[in-house]
Image (cartoon, rainbow over all chains, first blue to last red; front, side, top):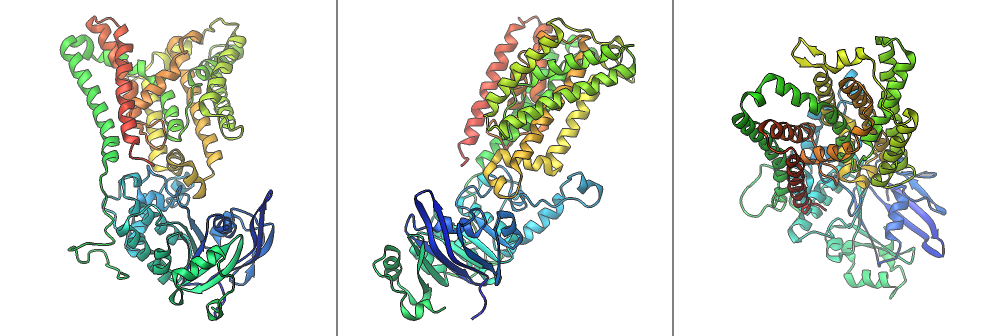
Length: 258
Length: 343
């Protein structure tokens, strides 16, 4: 078994009286899609925020490629090659796709112009088009603001942006929540293509069909703890739901062996 | 369905990756507003030229119009950045008055009425404007006071302090300033004030369209949360944007001193509303993320041309205010339609 890209052990996070994480474990390997599932309040978003550096856990360890990371911040996470696509708030709606792709990481011109903050629009456009093409995102009008595009297209741009900058892991928070059938399928295909580049993709989703369609592994969170790990090929929706709701708590045999 | 159709692949059947754009209605409208506002200006100029003839279209009158628009335009350029970044600055006119009083006081204190005194006053004026802008920025980002309230507060404070410093009596600017920047012309044709305003507009257009500064201002106005999560330091950038607006109000103060020869304390009470009107007329969205320098320039010119044309054609000048109000409402109505398609 190869070393995990990211390995979290015993994460605890308490907000006042609420214990969002009670010793949660989680792992991501390169080139896989791992679905993080759990009922509302299971601690999924807290876990993702912890792993992307937004929240500092009260206790527990996070190892990235085997090395323990202390006090992960969002900037550190980004530098380590970890990107997060949030359910909303991902894009600047009035900017065009390329501007969104490079938002916060604009390429500047060389020499004096760059030091004065002049944008290298041509380079950004060229690199942006290459990136979108690699990931199979079709955009008819590169000059339109993303607000004029469909939900699927916007999600495609948001995922591409994460894929463009992530070298290791992408967290996707409900990427298909607001999408129709065809667009959902496109985003799932995009997720597979991102995975095939060797990146570890973490998919947070409530949609069991999506989880079963795209994930390689499933980790189930319940009441702030990981209660089960499954190989998607060897699991049914019933098993997952049972684990989510606590109907079964045993980590069934080979499924927990990864 | 895991197959990946590369771009340029089969165009027939249903393309799962062809996430088609339903309509870029908003896009067309937002570009449209700039187009039709330009058209309105052109039509107004055409109409007045035909009805009034030479008195309107003469070089001297064009020069009048351009000069009349200059001071508001420089302020409007600062306001444009604030509005693009999703804020609002109600303090601009008061900051102009305050900066003008400070600048004028420094000019008179240095004395002699020479270039040295004027430069010292100009520096003081710009510094005073920047300071108020910085205060606005701090109030909005650090104290988390809504821009409307924060700048309404500094509007009152700046105006009050200007009255305190001047005892409520207008100060006279050095004659040299009036003779040079105020009424002087480049090659005897283009007024210096117009040159300054044009340079400011060009500089702001470059800043908005070609630099990271402008890009981040647009991004913050479009979605502060998205900008923040993309690594943009939103607070620091907003502070810079408000400071820019204050600085340009300080520059406008020097222009106002040069033009009128006095601090015109009572003459800028409604400048903030005029400036916001100009920016919105020019197609900027009060919700942020949208706006152009070209639109702002046109938005500043429309009220000036209208007033000038009404006076020359003998229409009661009061109609100008009515007409501007009407055009503004039409523009904002379009803006609302435009925003309907936004998250």
